[in-house]
Amino acid sequence: MDTTEAFASLQCLDCAATHDPETAGVCPDCGGALDPVYDHAGTVPRETLAAGTAGLAGFADVLPFPADVLVTAGEGGTPLIEVPGLADELGVASVYVKDEGQSTTGALRDRELALAVTAAREAGAATVALPTMGNGGQAAAAYAARAGLASQSFVPSRVPFVNKAMVNVHGGDMSVVEGRYRDAADAFADATADADWHSVAPFETPFRHEGAKTLAYEIARGLDWTAPDAVVHPTGHGTGLVGIEKGGRELLEWGLVEKAPRLYAAQTAGCAPIADAWADGDDVPQPAERPDTICGPLEIPDPAGGTHALDALAATDGGAVATDDETILAGAVSLAEAGVTASATGGAAVAGAQVLAERGAFAADDVVVLVNSVTGNKEADLLRSHLMSKGI
Image 1 (cartoon, rainbow, N blue to C red):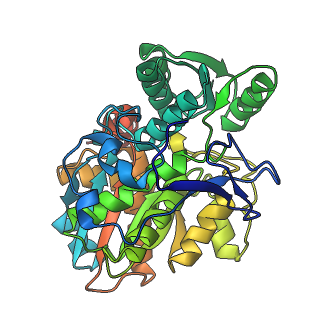
Image 2: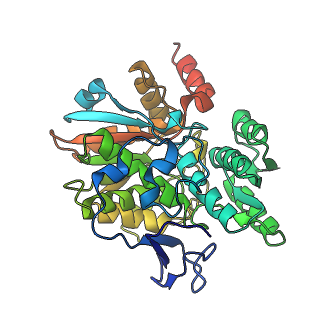
Image 3: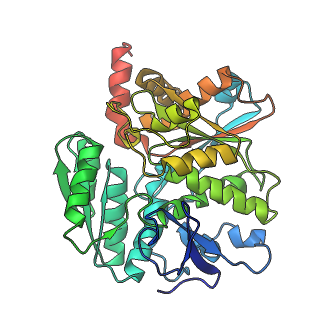
């Protein structure tokens, strides 16, 4: 495996055991999620994270794989868009939207799968596989194609047509499973037991949440190397939260920012295991018994990284919030009216921020970043139906 010099080991997020960088999958000792550990000689200069090279390759010095090894398609580099009207509504100094919908396949998952597929190829895999609500499957298929690998996605039948179609468009194989995400995950587990596939499911590879940490780098860079006071992130499995927390912590350790942002998980009331656990003071989320929401990427009843997401919220003095679908759709429309093509999933960040503001979570001088994790084009039908119901 061709890795960067600084990539020293993999550490288990559950039992803290340390393993060789070439360890595949989960912790051999306890089955927990692994996390890359680095040995940087001194601090990392700001120039290392400066804009220039497209995609994750621009951050290769602080990632596990060199730029010439990374499977990249120009992912990331997404705009940070100021929304003054929303800042006025929330009573804060400024609000920005980090628009991941403008990434390569239209989702934050690009950052995650670029790194995870690179690791799979370097490990000698021929096929990558995962259960998905659609966006991860499309990204996996796209990056597998660039790496010369096959991909297998297990997708619930209720996932919208466009999400399923794009998996095939990129050349990926797809099994449509009757039911919801839990059914697709069970089918994936059954299939992988008998197949020589490399899992790129959330937290079954050390590299998906590692790819997501670059979001923290870009946000700080976009704010002239100042961290925002708060980041509100639509949350399913928790890869984004765990990644942003690590990226923010690294920036602080390297002396590139003066603080790390408070992180807030935004979920839907119809499927809120992390928000419910946070409200109840639990360390481990309980699976949602009857998940039901129009925001497919957030309908994850038993998040693979739920415990680690809660740890990220606690480490940053953040929190979690759940809002109903109607409020989420209204939030997405409000961003669209401000010129930001937000998805229904991104609307969860808006709706969550509105509730957080009502609870007094933000100060008047706060800078708040909302993550729009999916392009609005993938969820346009949901927004259209919402507007029609309002007679618009």
